[in-house]
Image 1 (cartoon, rainbow, N blue to C red):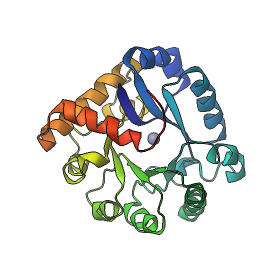
Image 2: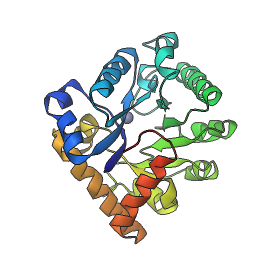
Image 3: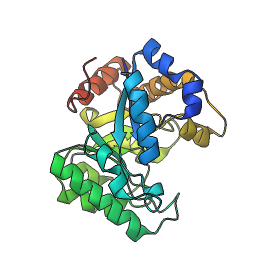
Length: 244
Ligand SMILES: [Zn+2]
């Protein structure tokens, strides 16, 4: 069994056979729906494919394009809320709007006792401070800042190691500083990989990318890759998402 702790699935991925690949490889994916139409799409895929674990949240990139009320049905029913957060690097949406949407969703998660997956790009300091007000389990997606990691370690967060761990020093720091019982691996989906490496990838590559990240964690921590795999499977059980 493989666990991709954060990805997006597109129409093209489905045309390229991702649903079959998930069966073949026993590949479970915490699959983000990022806005109301995307959530509807991911929910429909999850009905066809048990390996898709939907996570729903209004992504900071869409914070000013949709109303939170149109997300409520998804925010109230999912097992993990996210990807939510703030971003001052890759998006121009006003930060006050992003913050309002983010905090409202954190409050819903806290009320429900529901774990969250957070996007922190460029806002690592502020989000690191905000999370100290919440007691829900927190997963930090693809942390890639050289700073403020201590804020997240103090809060006992989980981390999904990004697919650029082979060459990104900040991601390697996460691996070194975070305990194995708080680590996952993620691909973020084919679009993100395409962005990271500058060429298109087929969903068939995703399992390979996860295994490569696991090898890299094994090297950086000096722990056998099989043990890293086992630990990731153990870590996901805490969230009680599926019965493989
Ligand atoms: Zn993502």
